[in-house]
Amino acid sequence: MAEGLGVYLRLAAASVRATARRPAHLAARFLAAALIVTLEVAGVALLLDRFGSIGGWRPAEVVLLFGLGFTAQGLALVFGDTLEADEVSKLVRRGTFDQILTRPASPLGWVVASYVDTRFFGRSLAGAGTVVWAADRAGVAWTAGRAGLAVLAVACAAAIIFGVLLAAAGFTFVTVQGSEAVDVLIYGGQYLASYPMHIYGSALRFLFVWLVPIGLAIYAPALGVLGRQGPPGLPAWLAWLAAPVAAAFLAAGGLAWRAGIRHYVGTGS
Amino acid sequence: MVRTAVFFALYREQDRVAGLDVADAITYVWILQGLFAVVWAPWFWEHAEAIRSGEFVVELLRPGDPYLRLAAFDLGRTLSLLVTRTVPVLAVAALVLPLRLPGTAGGLAWLAASLVLAAVVSFQLRFLFGAAAFWTPDYRSMFLLLFPVLWLASGFVIPVEFFPGPLRAVVDWSPLIPLVMAPVRVATGRSAALAVAGQVAWALALWLAGRLVLTVASRRLVIHGG
Image (cartoon, each protein chain N blue to C red):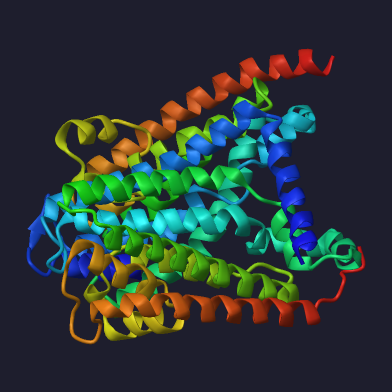
């Protein structure tokens, strides 16, 4: 098992080295990934400043949610960018996936490790910076417990986004063509979870707290970080439920990926 | 959909912010939704890739005016997106949500004109960014760095009305306004004539810029191809 892991680490290292061969290019993409987060957050901060508050939350508190969301998204995309529909569709249509299946390695491990994309760390870094800045503005007194909750939120949300990507990739094996529904779940879900969940109607809340639990993963721990009381039905101790729920969702994503591979048919290319 | 919920929540405590009320904001959300694919067309880099590979030379060899032909070809595709995507999206949204769209035939004609002008300006901007490929093969990294700024300044994150004064003043005079904000202003009936006039002015200015770039660049391509 340890040896098996070593193979994937070497693969990942190789793909990182490959992108590092063009340092200026890598730096530009890294910077661009960070910049898009920074400006998106700036836009949201400007908007919220005009209104003063949303659902009783101050702008800085909402920006903290955005920071958590982007940090998680960046992490998930470092490993999962190739699982996006366009890329999987390319793997299938070009016949690359046939080769992957013949290798003595797990197809998922192979795909993830060979296409690690470090530029998305730019997103995570900018997201983490946003969290620190927003926490300062919101007057959060950092304790070990609160920092732990923030890490928990990021880890769980990243796992969930990765789970959505996995399930979507499984789906793409069947449809070959990409589907926009996935983008809605990934980007829409993360955008939605970047605002306090209690502003939404019950249908959206149910969907993104319990079915695609990214709302649970970000909102519930953030309540703890900010020292806020949750609304009825969403108590702060739910934060600790985020970990098992995220793990279960990730497992479900893995099953969908497997089911997708079982239905995989080469395109004859 | 999420943005709609966010704006409803934001406006729960206030009626009007920066001159916009909740109907204006919701209209903005759905025009944005409808125009996304038109402005950032999926075929964004087609010309740039053709320039890099040299295939673009075919465009210059064809009879007729190359810029006009590229514009017409692009407009055909964006118009089909407008008809199959933007209009249905807006129609469905208007049925369920309190959008602020013009109620008269004349008003709708203005909105249609504004949407088409948005498509025209978007082609011209995309052409100029793609034309960077005449000078550098790494046109994409440069655009990636610029993109976040364009994304915010053209109003894809929040309506530019919510920008602070000085920033808003700069952005209002940029060729990014015709892309989304001008159609929104026409739809909500705030300074509609001015918005369309701005679109026309930018369409003309970018037309000249695009032609100039193509003239200069095609000389380069000839040298390049030997």
